[in-house]
Length: 420
Image (cartoon, rainbow, N blue to C red; front, side, top):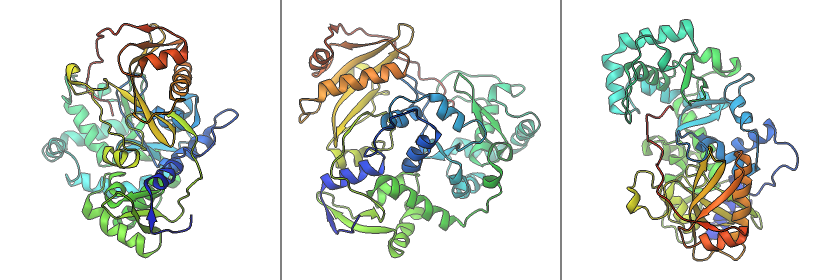
């Protein structure tokens, strides 16, 4: 794209959607590993989340951009040879291309010093090093292993109430001494040594200097965002201002990032030199709450004039839109949102609430109905049911030529210990 000093929000939106892969046409034939590589090559990573109300968040970005794909494709890429994805802390727990692993070794080194990890785990690392060494030896001798496989492991109930075995494994994971081999059906991690998991060329690759690695991470962020503020760029890999901002200026000096101003944004913005701005975007996609297009809520508001908050932790009577809400992208705008739940026992995708944005176009209801049916089919569900809740429910039901069902208070999924 030819460099420009000033951009409108509409132009930035097109650039951002293109950068995230929404300008690409979905494959006309079977979806294969090369399609997965193309998407994660654009997004840089998929955020992992253990909540499984509809499907776990890291499965959704591929569906949003490619349509129905075999989930085994993603699972194989993250657990079988030739492995192309690995897990680590990037934008929270994430799946990343294996080529990114050397760029995060500085973060692993910091974790070994008790830096960049939460206080309780850092303290455990200092005080229980002998026990951690024993757990490491167990993994080295018998891996891949889960926390529940470690001798003497006693599970505890409740949020973040980990056993010592789990704490030791998580410290070793943060520090890069072990990594994720695969996951059980319960989503529990199996850990193993990096040299037995990563491709040899990656494991044996030289470790970049920390500043070089951080500069490359900022460049990956800029490619994925198209245009972003310095804060947007650092948030993508959760870098500190001290780590990120000098690297942004270095990328400006070398011409990789182009300073631009965006109408309505008080902050300076930066555009990747290879960013493209299509004439139009013709997307129609349901977005998981942790899709990289929308995971940074203030950027989502700046880009789409769409205020979005996840309400899982909000008491039911205080929720505005629902428990686990998917925004709906149509064309270049987010035009609606639906609170979804996959009722696997009854093979139903339940739309527990539906709301439209004030400027939603007339085709929103039929397009959203089509997207919901596509999602249901992908998930192996047989029908879509729409509750009366939400201002858009009647229009959505009319588009699908189905009746509305009465909303009923259902038991919400228990927020148990995450297995990232």
